[in-house]
Image (cartoon, rainbow, N blue to C red; front, side, top):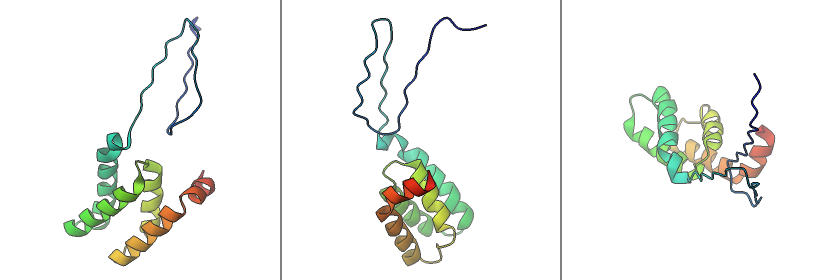
Length: 115
């Protein structure tokens, strides 16, 4: 059975200047997801990854979670890529800071290279 009602969706993860003008018979719903809407989910994601690597060091976990969250700007993708890079470099706090600073500077080129 084929639907007689056409459904069109436009989803974006970043703000856009494209104006969507629905026709008279369509419904338009806009939901804006802000950075603070995802912070708890991102924190849990980071915590799970770091807890697996350092289960007996809660202070180290808190510090690393705070650093990653501060630089993530609400982006799960950036966190995923950062954690992948950190897996080989989280021997010391200085190593972690170095990797996170490097990734923050590389954000635009990182997106192009990864996706």
